[in-house]
Image 1 (cartoon, rainbow, N blue to C red):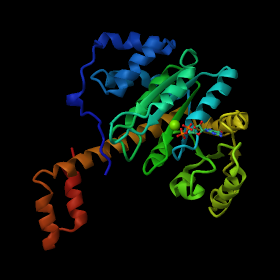
Image 2 (cartoon, helix red, strand yellow; image 1 turned 90 degrees about the horizontal axis):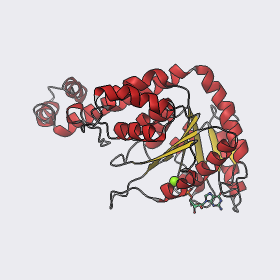
Image 3 (tube, protein in one colour; image 1 turned 180 degrees about the vertical axis):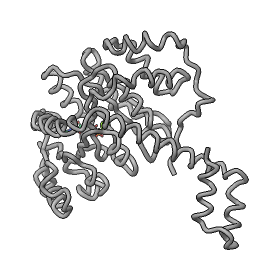
Image 4 (spheres, rainbow, N blue to C red; image 1 turned 90 degrees about the vertical axis):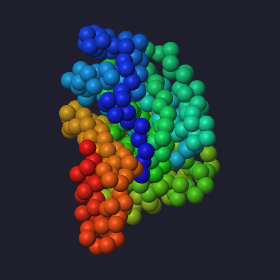
Length: 329
Ligand SMILES: Nc1nc2c(ncn2[C@@H]2O[C@H](COP(=O)(O)OP(=O)(O)O)[C@@H](O)[C@H]2O)c(=O)[nH]1
Ligand SMILES: [Mg+2]
């Protein structure tokens, strides 16, 4: 059961924005003003009282940016590769938004800072906007705040948004829903190479990357991946497997070309389709949150009466579940 920290509307942190500030702020964001982008992101991330109006004002302007999700096991080189991809995209004159979802340390509760530090290289470039997001409490998934930040960056007109998440458990399914293109990264020397690639990761890949191509064993990892893909009828021969070295930049232009080629087919599906998919994801997560909260709270009279009913055979578990759902709002 995932624990979400979506703040209920009646407890939204107060925003210093007055209703009349929303329009001008969104206008400034759309001109690419960094302070406005940062302010909108902050309001959306903390789901302040201004967030609903901001999201409404943003909606008509969304759908331009392509969202590319980079996921894979820790240490595969996702952050380093994202940096290399940023460099390449900037040389091509494209603007880039970056969202890095850091796993929170369960001990300190803080984000792992390494990703932030490495990505600050891009921070004095107006064509790049980086936001790190702790995955506070989101042990099982992507924070819905990430989707709202995508909307802010999309509204600000960035051409492409790179979303880095660690592929563990539920995360990859969320990335599959939210990203337009899914890039799954592995590397030699991660232990049980293919074992480490949880099968869920393989299933969502539009592109597979073997990073650390400069390291011994990269070729073997490529072969293992091709083998794993070949036994999946729907994926065999259809998912490009690329080798990169994020450190030297080798293979990065080919990766970006491949993202673009797939991006063209995604683009043909239309901006509205992409936005709808993200909206569906947010609704599904919110619904799951409501049910989870309900179950945690124990239902109207607690789950105990339902448990009694199930035990005595007057209710089936399915009927009991339906009764929890009826009470979930
Ligand atoms: N040799 C080599 N090392 C790399 C490469 N890419 C990343 N690394 C190193 O692998 C480690 C983990 O990289 P990082 O980007 O933090 O991985 P992440 O956890 O997937 O984001 C770092 O020490 C990187 O310097 C690569 O292409 N070749
Ligand atoms: Mg990283």
